[in-house]
Amino acid sequence: MVRDTSKDEAYFTEEIIKCEEEIKEDEKELLELPLGDARRENYFSAIEDRKFHNAMDKYARGDDIKLVKKDLEEVISIIQKKHSEFGFD
Image 1 (cartoon, rainbow, N blue to C red):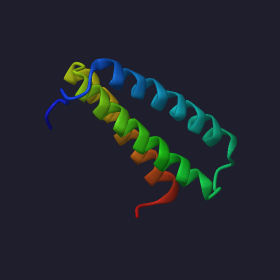
Image 2 (image 1 turned 135 degrees about the vertical axis):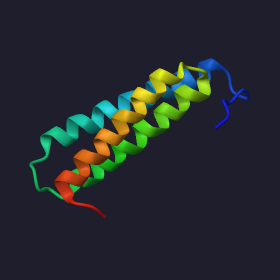
Image 3 (image 1 turned 120 degrees about the horizontal axis):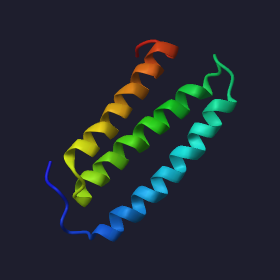
Image 4 (image 1 turned 90 degrees about the vertical axis):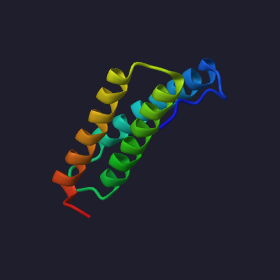
């Protein structure tokens, strides 16, 4: 993957902040749903997707690859939680 130089740092920073707010809202909603609720899988998927795109925006912005790697490890952790709760697809 190549870092995106067509957009400036401010663009990616704004996208990252917006995405982090959406992640917090989804995490709050996820915590309010009881175990076994089918909607939980949707929230896990949304959080997983947003965290992945957030990591890619950080990489495109030019953040240190070690920080991006930690974000991607969080995505893997979410996938593992989703699979342990709902089983594999």
